[in-house]
Amino acid sequence: MSYPGRVSTPEGYLGMNGLTATADFFRHQIHQPVKVDPALWSLQISSMEGGEASLTFDELRTLPKVSISNTIACAGVSGRNFHMGTALWTGVYVRDLFKSSGISTMGRFFHITALDGYVTYLLVDALEGAILAYGMNGEPLPIEHGYPVRLVVPGVYGYKMPKWIHQIRLQEHEPSGYWESKGWSSSGLVQTTSLILTPHHREEVSGTVLLSGVAYGGTRKIVKVEVSIDDSDWMPVNFDFAHPNCWTVWQTEWTPTAAGDYLIKVRATDDSGFTQSESAPESVFPNGSSAVHALIFRVVA
Image 1 (cartoon, rainbow, N blue to C red):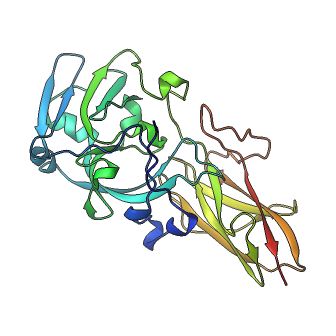
Image 2: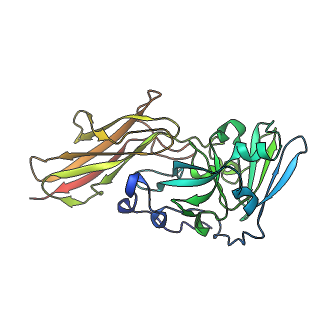
Image 3: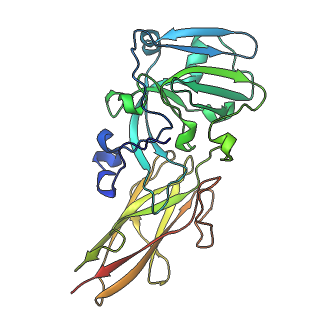
């Protein structure tokens, strides 16, 4: 059973500084949210060499604190599925957690277990820059987003960032994970994508039209966003200053010459040189999709 919870609409995506309001941030989990008493919660960490430690919530919060802006996208994000959001996350670097506990990070995989029974894993190298977050947008992490602690990892899809974490184990051999066992990518690396937020599909508009949306490349920086109207040549559009790990907001104004239906497409290019392709498969399974987003809107007199 899936509990998608609140689903963001395009209007709720962008708040101040390009962040998504906590109340509008998408949720998706296998089970219902877990209510945890922080006074009874502890995090168990262990290494291949037998080292282990247990930290209470108060002990975790005494470690050096860091805040990072990071986009989280569902592996199924597409033009028909706007499960993506960006928040300011506050917590502790995973690397600092192990270092302060005196536990070696020798090994290839982190195996992560959540209190709702969810399990996943990540290569040790993928956790560079990752944090155990207990804050979201300047407030305590809400229950539905993983209170007391969730994982936030730059550059991977949301199924690699469990909520309600209570155990992290290092091991040499690739473990099993919930979605990975169903055939989804073991790396969970984000595919470069772009989405149109305005106008909406089949929306009726008039006058000058604001074309806008977001583009995201995971740990890669977006360097170009282009749109095409009715299969015209691709036209570069303005976008916010881009940096890795966060979406960038793009927009441009367009004045139609006549009433009628119009097809708009958007594509993004990242700093690796990759450009989204119209020939890319729309199917998101098993690696996520980098297909061009397209929709139709109607201009009325």
